Length: 388
Image (tube, rainbow, N blue to C red; front, top):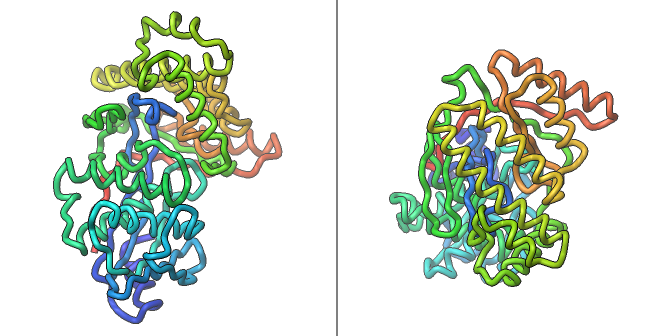
């Protein structure tokens, strides 16, 4: 999928040229899972795969939207009708961005929008944030807002995209996905502090060390609106309240045991243990990357997966199978990535073993009677930007 394809489809559907094409990447989180809504740290990278939005403004208050993923049908909604729960499906993420901009005081007159994407949908690679942020980039330019021209503005744009997803699409996500799509830098991971909103670019170039980051889309569909994600978020919020802290970020690693002793519910203790130890793993992973210590990075990946599997209970048969198979093939480390309940896993492998590991994972899935996964190596990409 390319910007040229988005522009061509726009011309075919709407009979005129788009004002431009903007794109934004999906993301894969290296480590720091389910920490963003707990005020913690995360370390995502932007994917090379991107979502492209071709746009032209209208003056009648209508959004006309089309997506190649949805078969190029045109959906129409009046901006005055956008509200929580309406519209539904993929158009909620587009309309939600327009709604969020209007809530922030920016008048949106309407728009024709065509979306094409090569970010896998339902794979836990943040296709929704890529969609939101590509549309945000287009509106930012065409409405002359200028948020994307400065770091603080990109942070604001990411927040507005998160509001769109939370309030209109109804997915109670934290802000990591949108930050990764708007605030990353090519060849770097983004150390995101969800409590302060601060970011720091951390070099991430495993290819310079003969290594590769392999992403495996398990094809076990991942969804954030089925209640499982919200249930875990609520458990963490209740635990923080019981401990007398604003977020679980305030529970220090050396005070974890004491905090766990104060909680009566075993499930809450497990959730808190994951969050606090995961934040510590992010700190250690950043230090390891800065020392070019990829052996330690791999070990931390694997520790993170065990915590997500056992304490947070968001893994599944397919994700565990990827991790176990990759480690059995000699991967330095492997873990599920994203919210879980399906989606994707990552493995840090030697570059000359990408095909071997991928083939082994595919055989393991076939032997288990599971749908064939899709494996691909990725590098750290760049943020949302104009393409045409």
